[in-house]
Amino acid sequence: MDMADCSLSIPDMPKSTKSHLMKVLREAGVIRNEANGRGRRLSLRSEDLEARFPGLLAAVLDTPSGG
Image 1: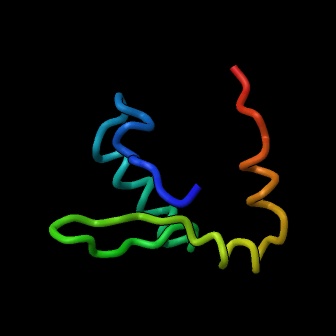
Image 2 (image 1 turned 45 degrees about the vertical axis):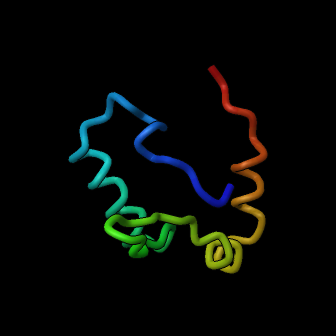
């Protein structure tokens, strides 16, 4: 997964909560925040995560979601 629309993933979550979550993920090095015209684009830092935690991302993304 390269890109997803975060506004669609959890529509009932308050904007302030989403902003805080994105800040935590960015500061932890999980995502990068780039300028994209008048907005911002968030992307997963998969290469960095794979280097730091080999196989973790593949295991998480290949796991079927329950419920």
